[in-house]
Length: 409
Image (cartoon, rainbow, N blue to C red; front, top):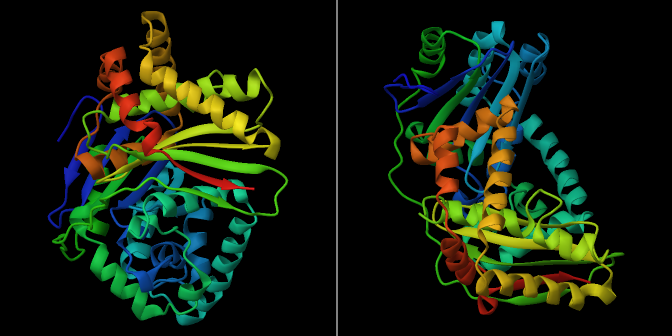
């Protein structure tokens, strides 16, 4: 299919391709798979992330060194990441190396052999990654907050896993997880670069078209029955760390865009967010205060994080709750609403200038929705949001009785 913004094609095995043409000499190609840590069984905790590490450790025709060198020898980069719901392999390279990148991504996705020697070595690497994470309370608290909110559900478990489970992983575990969760109709190949689309299709058909058709049959276990909780954990830290939040709208909820705007107003990336002004700029209570909204396929999460001196904790929480109450009780004026919309639109427009981020963003959108809205449509949806809608969403998500809190002191 040819559109004004994006070009798409679907292989016979269900793998989808989306491409955005640019004039840059640099190309970006990624494979997004709708499988992540929430798809693990309890005994597989950490396996999705472990596979993301191990996939580079050799294929049927390449040793680990040759996997990395294949794209790095021509100045390119090869990378991957895992989330709760996705595994992504991607590469950046000069446009002349599109074919090389496509072949390499196909090779590591479908032909990795996961040698036990390399698996054992990677266990040590991930153990160090876990240790590093535990040394960073400002990062660890986000995972523990999800464990608090999604109590007992697979989506609650952190992505890295635990040493207990990781030490038991073997090649058979990896192959079983891939067989159970890597479905061709749940894969998207995303591309941003300067290449004739028909030639790109030719490369993708050649290297991905022969993969066995595997269609997803079973859906994910939905999250239900959220119960707000408050927990304080004693940590030997210089600062008190706190995170407060609630479940939020899923990725396909009609109010998702309203939630994105509300989150940006509360504590988005700009220095003039309400909470940054209230805690940092006016009172110097926090160096870092931010809010975040993550939309999953069947639920979502909104949270506010800050770090402060122990003596300022209650004052900071009172200020946050005061800002929440204002948003629940008082509609934004026309000027305030217009500024908030322009700020979000500007941030989105600027983010698309980074072509690697754009490649990942359109890939995820196509994976979830089977479409990517052009920027003008995204902006139109933001412009159509009313102050009444913002207030309505604020009363749902910022309801004081529905908020959970986790404190490290």
